[in-house]
Image (cartoon, rainbow, N blue to C red):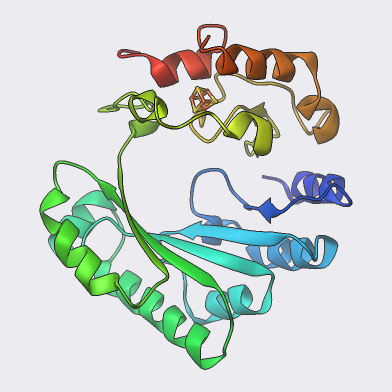
Length: 244
Ligand code: SF4
């Protein structure tokens, strides 16, 4: 996302009571070229807002750890899908297991040593290829982080996906009324499952986030989904469909 667009979004959040800010939708936030500027800007502009970081930990070196520790980051979620090198690297292709484990454990040590209260969580995305490691994963991380979560893979609309709303029967779509999701080109989408931009509700580069959030299209989508009608939104249709 261009820096000017990122800054516009942050500025539009001022005075709106935004409780959480995640400087990404998908991808790796620590790979964002403006991450230092972005975290500093959000921390200064939205001092009462907690920043959440979801990271695979691969780029969390000493310099980036310092950045998280001195900004308004309140939650760090680590995506780690295995406890052995072989299984981990099969799921996170291109990353190096030893480096990730060293980065994450060093960060946790620094949080304790510097008495920085950051809530930490490791998330294991369950697949048929790593389910045998769940118990060892839990045993390893319990006590080191605040929460250990094992969650099923919903596939996010790509190959091998299972419909997100297989679980969605239990999960109401709170996203639509509580969270705004903006892709890197400024497209506002219903939720994180629409990483492609199937259902674009407006573009923050062209209009205000507030006007998009309160638009008739957004309202109509909220009404539809609350009544169990998913077919009017391509993103929601795919989300609940058995087949794409
Ligand atoms: S894509 Fe639509 S139905 Fe699926 S979780 Fe998001 S808002 Fe809900």
